[in-house]
Image (cartoon, rainbow, N blue to C red; front, side, top):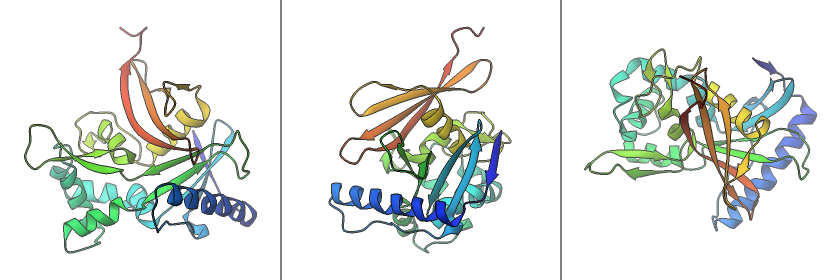
Length: 244
């Protein structure tokens, strides 16, 4: 069960300082000249999972999509979801929460610096890791197709494995209902901060969360050693060894 709490001003100041510092580090490491470093307190969320507090904060577009517009787009344009084409999903979102009359410009906006930071503490210590969740990292061509694209990395890549009242939340067709799209954030938090994880290689970290009696979810994260930031890469549904 997830309990929602209010972020106070002291927590906000500490978290904002952490967000600014890590955003600048990422910007410099990627040789970019732009990064989103500041967010209003209304963009901060505090939740409690298994009696531990966690925080996440991010852009209006990311929060708006996951908390509201994704469900609205799914209800308005159900055929745009679950057809294996990321462009269809983004088109439905742009028609629901208008960004640009040109879809390519809307896609560029979605892909550029729209994310959340996730923390398990307001303090910056060695044990307090940082997770960044983008809407998606990039779009790649689907093999053996001419026009279809797929989400690579980010929350939309992971959502292809999930549904809402039986309707796909992204490009896939798997029937794994979430109570709400934001539940995927809570699952990532459990996997990253509360489950025991393992480094498969220097930059690849994974952990497991139980989905149901038959399946586990394997969460795969990318670790960027120069900035010490983790990114969600993908999720795999695996059959439990003791299930029939």
